[in-house]
Image 1: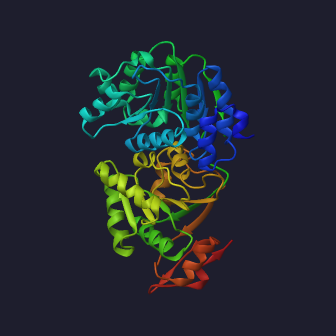
Image 2: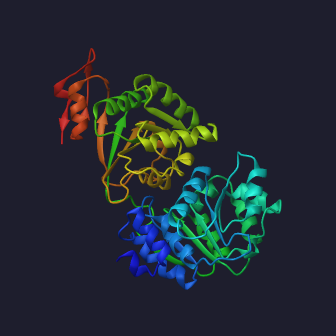
Image 3: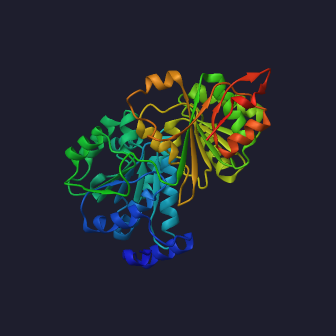
Length: 408
């Protein structure tokens, strides 16, 4: 199928052509006719499969100019970074349309955002907390909203936005179209759809919670934290294919600790983002990562939801995620746009016990057992590069004993 077959108008087709896209992704061509029919939609697609364009294309196709300055399309997302990303996507799709997109989020002056909204917005992209505050301040009227898009609802609920979201839904016109897009659908998300959506049609580009096929996955079983650090430094220093690596840390403190250690070994090539960092710092860090100035980016789960970077070669889970949904979201940062990606997860015995029964990692994942690591051993570097080692065993005075290696 081509974009011409989707019944897009000329302005959108020209924009798509200039962006270099040839064919719609699975979620895009499956969702488009349903949205155009006016039905509510629950779109399930993994990160990197074109979810954003899946809802933007039909919404913009049906958008009509109105002299009223209040928004017609409302898009809710969990993070500031994702707000910026979606606004940029709208801008890319509408160079030949008179569509004004405005993004609002917390952590900055609300008065500036209120002025922007009072000046007029056709598409409003927002985080729930700041949006609710602006509605209460009378920055705009909700009566013109014809389409509501909720992106990554599961993450918004995890962040504690349930009350704000339900309050917002109560303030919107009853006659509207609801679109929800996510990589995972939890019980809480299902309940919210049952309460506020009208018989949504479920569209799956892939079974919910399943990893992308073009991501090669490995688990490294390690005894302790120090081995994780040595293993991480080894992989980064020995594998030339690791040109754009996203490293996940469970906490902000751990992210900072890893940054200090890696920045000393790989100066000027490492960045870190989490919610304690200033907004400008986060934006600039992601920009440097996109541009290739930073080869390695350390992030927490929440912050990484807003990262849309092409050609991430590897995702490294420094620690095992707590739930399968976070594992899917993490590894989905690589292997995008039909390109191959590699995901690596470091797992200690303690983490195995804590995660027992949760089925975080997929069955049959390739495992590498690492008892002790020496970060400077060239032979070990080569083995890990080829990813053919099953077990790395003993060290004797900093030298790997060859008989301790077991090959697959």
